[in-house]
Picture 1 (cartoon, rainbow over the protein chains, first blue to last red):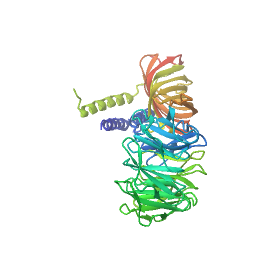
Picture 2 (cartoon, chains in turn yellow, purple):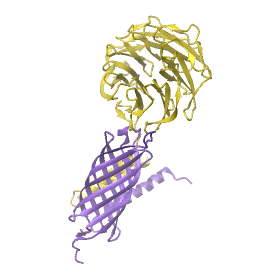
Picture 3 (cartoon, rainbow over the protein chains, first blue to last red):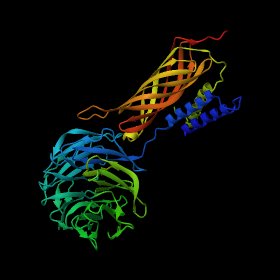
Picture 4 (cartoon, rainbow over the protein chains, first blue to last red):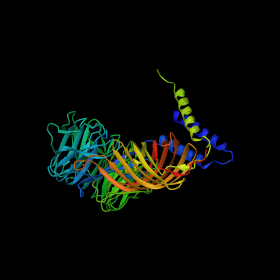
Length: 383
Length: 195
């Protein structure tokens, strides 16, 4: 308001002086003055915040994490200064805590977790020593929505490491009883938004193991666990409303959809599950509004899109699906505002940006993309 | 004691009006002489286009600006301009030179200039292996200013404003720089008007 008064007054005076020029035209000196005033006011006025969020991708070939800032409106990717940031050997899964102050990266050959402090204004990373030990080959990692526990599934040692997280320092401490045993060759895991249940995907056995999470972070198997899924399950996602769980079965080319019992965590296949995906589905993402499910098909280089019935869990193919989604997409992540979907190709090291049509979920090509120079194996997008 | 918002706004408007009136005072006569060398030094503000290198917002940087201007003719000069601006995460230095054109009046003058040179940007983001990231790139731009004579040897640079394009960290930035300070005069060219 004050700035507006200042602007109006100054411009009125400038206009008045210019109009009263005896020759009826502005003198060069006055023209220069007007330009200077305009420039000065522009400097005073132009300090607004850019609306954006950040994305981090692990690059095991470089032993580093790439960082990008993404414009909320255009989805333009801008590399954050200093990126990529060095990690341990062969970084894989990564996760940012809800307050966006720390990034955790699991180093799959070191069997450690690196903790990075995130600069709030820049988004840059600074590693905080020491690194914390995990089990053998940490394959995936998730954090509960409260940011109090970190869960790591260790593929070779076939167990789950659970860490409590110090609120201020972000330091990790293994909870009592951790690591917790699970079946051989677990590959990925997911935690429900309420933080009550944890689900671990076993690729060899084509099973999902469910656990109840106690207040102290210890894990107890859910009754009737494990639950059957299709062959070669590789990725899992949970409906933000905590009603459904989605698992892509890469060998079958399908997606399993189960409903979640909110009290017990027991999984029950929805009618008609599993549902068709493309060739070698390898990753999936649920839109923030829960309405759309997108599956990255690495074999057919496309994206299968479903509209979800949030009552029955029954999916309906989106008109036009499958959509082009870059070359052999290996990762797919929804933009936090639900306006875009990002896919990552490991063969081309390209991040492709697809637009989401509101109301229909149809994916469209955009002119935006970014490169990571080497293949990325994990991507985390902040809200 | 609190000041009503409209009163504050009125005060700001009066200040703006006074500032503008000073700028538009009619010239009485043209000066026929100039110093051989003008040396400027003063305070400077820069709005650095840091979103271009991944920052969430523009960076407000504060520092200094200095230039030396050689008067080739009464209206034509060559300026050498250096500046340093600092913030919590960024240090930005500009080293530039270029032509300058001046309109002279009895006790004040306006100038415009074009500047070309180098920019050195340092992002103070400490890593275990290095204290900061640094990039040096091209810098160019233009702007102008208004000087008001305080004495024969000292002039107040009321304002100098420049728009600068810089190429650092693989991106192009559009920065705004506003400076103020004192100009000192050395030597003499032209002829003094007869009294």
